[in-house]
Each structure stands twice: as structure tokens, then as C-alpha cells.
Amino acid sequence: MVAVVACAATALAAGCSSDSDADGPDDPAAELSDADLTGGEGRELAAEEVAPLDGGVIVDESSPATTLAIIGSASELLPDIGIEISRLSAVIGTQEGTDTIARIRGMWDAIGDEVAQTRPDLVNGIETTIGEAIAAAESGDAAGADAAFAQISDFIDDYVGDA
Image 1 (cartoon, rainbow, N blue to C red):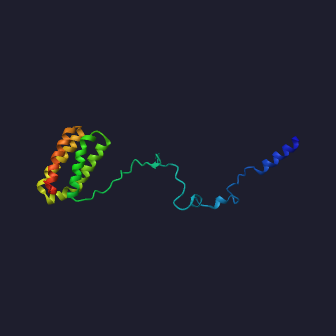
Image 2: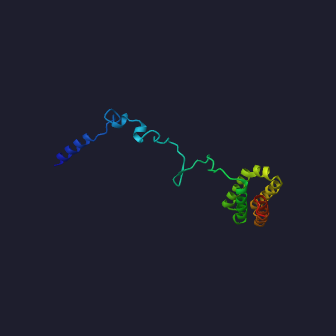
Image 3: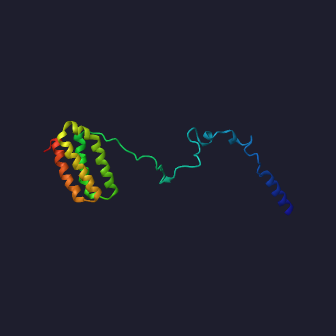
């Protein structure tokens, strides 16, 4: 009985032995490219060093934040600036506050030239008030941000004709 088991074990080992020529002509994958093995061109295996994942999203610290173009006329965007300034006192010191300031700056950058061309008498007042609102928010002065909102509202009414 022991001889039969030993013989079977030897036969099994001989049939399952590892051959150093596994990548040779008997290996069907030997003739395939990386693209063939991974499903097509552009789906090759990643390089050894890859960007870290954060919740399933590839994070690249050097890439800029996604931005959207600000589109609209001064008559459309000045009221939006007023709305953003009205929110400043409630979001001081938060990421939302930082984002709100960025939106205000972006909108003013988009329409400042138009306001200068159509109502040059209002440019300095609007620009100064926006600056005061941002400075108040950045220094944690909620009352200053609210005061700037009251001022900007008058300039917006003058510009769009809702006096």
C-alpha cells in the first residue's frame, strides 16, 4: 500500500513539476502584448509608481482646482456679488467663506471692465466696497461685512436701475 501511494505521489509530482521554460512556446500569453493582455490599447498595466487614491479618486497635488468660467453681464453678476457679500458674515473663518471670497473676486474680475465702460462713476465705489467686504471677512469682522453689504446694495441698485 505504501508503495502504491509513493508511486502515485511520484507520478503526480512529475506531471505537475514546474518547468523553467514556462514562458516558452507552450505559454499562450508569451506571444501577446500588454495591450492584448489588458483588453486593448490604452489599458496597459500602470507603471510602478502611481498617484495615491483618495476615496477612489486619483489625487494629483500639482493639478489646479477645477474652475468654471464666469459668464454674464455686469447687470447679471452685480446682484450675484451682492448675494455673495450678504453671506460673508455667516461664513467667516470657514472654507465656505474662503470660497465665497473667491467667487466675489472672480465675478468682479469678469465684469470690472464692463462697469468701467458703462458706469465709470460707480467703479471706485463698487471696487472699494468689495475690498472692504473681503477685508472684513478675512479679519473676522462680521459687522464690517454686513456694512459692506448695505453699501454694495446701493451701488447695485444704481447700476441696474432699481433705485
